[in-house]
Image 1: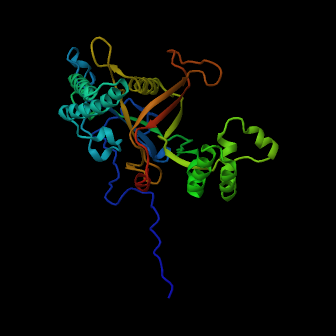
Image 2 (image 1 turned 180 degrees about the vertical axis):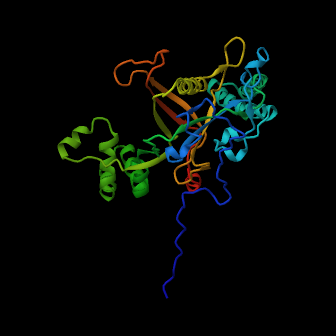
Image 3 (image 1 turned 30 degrees about the vertical axis):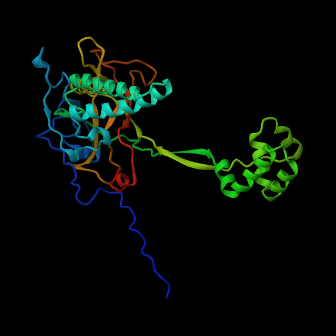
Length: 371
């Protein structure tokens, strides 16, 4: 009786069983003044019940959270639950200052040892010096960072926009050509190649080398044509070319990038103010802020968590996103070729193109989980 095999269960492309759909919590997050169209949330059935929320996450060290000089400028924030974000591994580590200094010490010692060998420093002097530098560097950085986890708070104000008409996402994996000629040659006839080379080297015994070459003729000929300077003429005369034995090598997964295109055409002065608030907020949060008073350190720009909704629930019929940063923003105030404004100077149409980049590379596990 033939042995039967069980086919693996195909990936579902939806979140795991214990995943709970996100619900838009109107009592927790406010989009007042930051929604377009202005009646998007009040009667979203007019737009098919589909919309996208941009949640904004800022560093706990940001002056937006606690501005001691101007407390009135502090923004209202909420805590972020762990299951609300998909973050890259290094920012998810529970790393305090002591652990960071330990890592810096080890990294510095390794780097110092290598540098010491190059410079000829004996007795482990390079490693000791490197360890001191690594420890000191981490210690200094820890005076400017309250932790090494990039802890964040989420703004209570979110941005709500209609789902773009050209919604799409691109997946990309890195592959590149790699020559495997040397490995293939050694695997196919390593001993014979060595014998042929030895015969040539020891007194240029061409007869012995020739006998060995006959056994592995193709390998030696290809190696000669490929690696010996001045042998190109042999290839031209003989009409022979070496096979580089190329293979495709997997080099990694690209971070997903995606673009949202919006055409803002405000219908009233209040909606125009919403559009201005939305554009200025995106611009503001894609840029860094100074951490120190001298302007030598930047605090990272804000991050975004983007969620698609249908009605009041997250739409799990399309892709989800990992946490993102806004990398490019193009604002066109005259998309029709003519600059037109309302009586108050507000442009009648503004086209905005925003490109986001995710902070986590995707794996089979995440794809199976609906990303």
